[in-house]
Image (cartoon, rainbow over all chains, first blue to last red; front, side, top):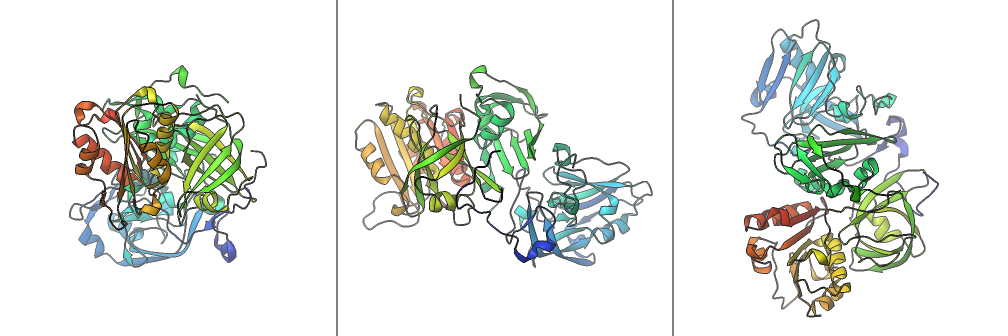
Length: 204
Length: 94
Length: 245
């Protein structure tokens, strides 16, 4: 790549004192960039459903009102995008995925899940990354309703993995006994996506 | 701001596709495997960001091309293209 | 066609066009020429190796090894404040191109030609008009150019001059935010009525090129098709969310 340097050009934001909170290769971003791979789905709340289906004893779907009645759970912390920005000290609110899974009783052979979304996006996760207080379905960001461009009405939130796993416009989770690579995972991105191990791409 | 603001045309991918294919791809023709519409790649609707890009059929909205780039590699999913025509005259040089 | 490799260009001149827009005249060794409407990819590299890449439309008609870009500074941009604020004569820039054969017009493609610009979308259209003038073309051409205020109009004097040459070009300005006293021109966002008044009738088979912020481009392209123009003769270059037209 040669040694060309553009005189006087600097990266927009420096790490500063947040260095310890940042996974390798990330920088702190005060904003909240919108990354989208398609048209923003327009979902009528009356038609919106959250489904948990597949290898479960009692698959269920919740309407918007029903899901709002579930025990509220808040996440406060950091999120990390594979494009190298991290947003530190943000918050989301919704329902814990643990609550949803308890309601459907996953079968013993359920090992993985695929999150499927309005608009067709998918992402895959091992069940253990969705349980134990590590994942949510959220509809509020920093106290406001989640904007459509950030995944509203509701998105999956799995903040310990790269943010492409926090699927926008989530429609449901399908429990499986095998792994099924989703949209980015089938296009060169890492199947797991742990930012602390820099699992960005296939083969990392 | 919503995705309307972020939508681009196929020419937004001209540089990346030139890297991958070595052809000026925006003038090349392709057929949609969904609706059969035939378009020059420059006419496709594109959503692009740091992870990669998708180019959609202006007729039916199906993905024709998905492309991701990272660490000196590209990944390409062209299942949405039923066929792609490459014209010798559009070949680029080094 | 073009070349793939990155090349180092030298800034020969920096020219402030408007409060937010700067033209950069670049000397590019071994430049093989380009077609009006094409763009280049520009790459910036910081000392720590961080790189940022953006595409910029070429503003100039082909002229040897000189390539001009016009960059509008976006307040929260990463690259445009550097190009339109920091860069000085003698500095160097990495670029690649030209790229983009789709959004291209040359005089031998004929017309009549309708060019619709929103803000900095005028840049590739200016390359087309400059080439039209350089070639002595009389292809009937109309530029409909939307800006916020009069001081935001890029290439204002040059457009006046080109339009005054009586060679079949008319330039119509639209000022959407503020107009000077006595302004009798359009003072609202481009709509179907305006496009009908300024453009040609569908029977005349105009070639239309629309460039600017995505929203404006989509609204205009939609109106043109709804007015009966052939979609295959409407070419668009969406610039993304580059601010309100």
